[in-house]
Amino acid sequence: MFGGRDQQFPPKIVDEFETLLSTKRIPHTIKRYPTQGHAFITDLAATRDQEDAKDAWQGFLSFLKRSLK
Image: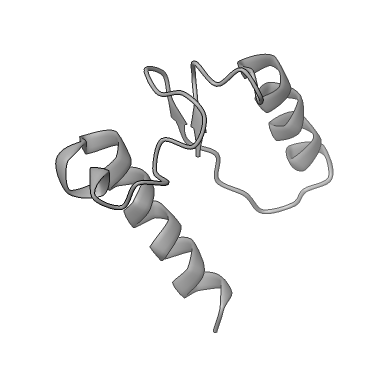
């Protein structure tokens, strides 16, 4: 999950990261939230009120369920 307004991981860096993962055939899912900044789901209360945060949190939980079998 990456925020489109994130200054720490700007879109160009995310693009390069995604390309590298694809080139190395590493399974991945990258989801971008264009209006969000860095760490937009650190406030768990926001996951109830903001759709992007709610969606990102659910995606994170799904990732954990798949990965921690």
